[in-house]
Length: 228
Image (cartoon, rainbow, N blue to C red; front, side):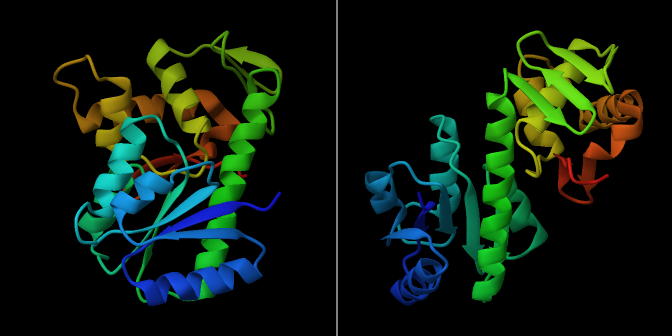
């Protein structure tokens, strides 16, 4: 079955261009011309291409609403807002990628394929006996056990939760603030430095697979199982 993509943009010309080209790439395309219309059209989509600056509800607000209600459909922002702060805001509300306007259709297609591949990898790994497998790194989700090349390693509770959270979302960048909100929600006075310390300890324990946890300067951390 073809992947279904929802394009959300109040510029009908952009919607038409994307619908035409992405349909030729084999995707099933639906368009919404506002965030409010997108909420009404939400169904079983494989990915959402989302503009930021729209009348009424913004793209940021729509993404935040979807994530808050448990909707984990991959989101790629398409927007003229391209400063570092704009990108950080996009990632903080749950974006999987961020493409600046004007864009090339080839770049959009490449980014879509990359994001869908990451999500398919995550879903496949989860489906295999509730265990994530990346090369010689195996993570038993229910047992909360981690093995490297068949040997169990000892992680703290926080290190285990951090690894599982990142590994369940391969390729997705999380800011330090987002990680604090996810993993230290009930712990006061946690700083961004705390995140860095736990990441460094976790990398050391992952040994030959330490590169699986990558950093993107200015943005945050991600799990990158293709780094070897």
